[in-house]
Image (cartoon, rainbow, N blue to C red):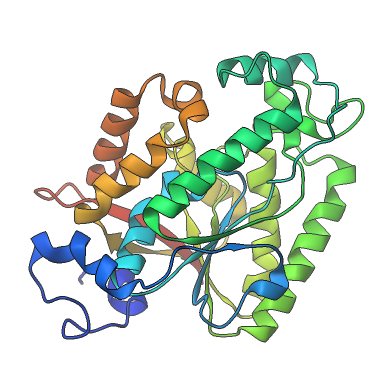
Amino acid sequence: MGIPFLATAIFVYTEAETCGNKANHSFQCKYIYIRSAPLQLTSFEDITKSSRHIFLSPHFDDVVYSCGGSLAVQVNNALRPLVITVFGGIPSSGLELSPYAFEIHKKMGGANLDAASMVANRRKEDASALDYIQANYLWLDYLDAIYRGNPAYYPRRELLMGGEVHPADIEIDKQLAQNLVTLHERLPDTVWYAPLGIGRHIDHQIVCSAADRLIQRGANVKLYEDFPYILEEGALEERLNELGGTFEPAFVEMSEMLPIRIEASGLYTSQVELNFGNRANMRRVMEEYTHGIRPVQTVHLERYWTPR
């Protein structure tokens, strides 16, 4: 039995509608079809039927890290995907950082930045990355987990990564799920992409949980592998077992778009050292992982999981 490829099912433009089948033409093609700059949306009300593919990103970098090749493939096929960053809110200028949040700021090169300035900087990085890929984007106003609560809900790494969602954050889950379901009812043919929740980061858990309500309503939801958390040995199997049920994998062949994913990922400059140590290592692990999904010649894939 052959491997199912999402690219065949998702990207509906024929070869005649694109720029032919020569591989070295693929990057130039997208500039022929995309006639306007990517849009920054301001609310759910701005989302129209043109958003046929919506990617839910817990933080500013998650979708580009995990699905950047798929975004580029869609753009190359005359589509304009939308990335919704859930925890993209700017904290109040007077917010006092917990010691753990301050340590994270230092690793992001922002030891002298307050929370509001740091998030504003990360928004600029996100805009640069998504403009580079040519994807539309929307930032929601929920705060990143390290900024929530007084005192902080997640003051230690073991609470942020692998802990349980704080009771006060259940309301975020409910609100987000309701907004997503309402949007699905308005745009029933849209394909959704949400984090599988590998690594059990609190914010990834919340977005995955909200996306589950879409699944319950019959929406077409693909769960992506959270990068770089997927790199930890056994992390994928552990998460699939935790969620239970049966999941079917599908693949997007994005070998020619891998350089775009890598370049866009590098535009999140505050995150490179925090997540990868340096840019060269970021490139290496992205190349190795996307090739290792199915180690055949020079094929690079992104994998998605659909509940059955």
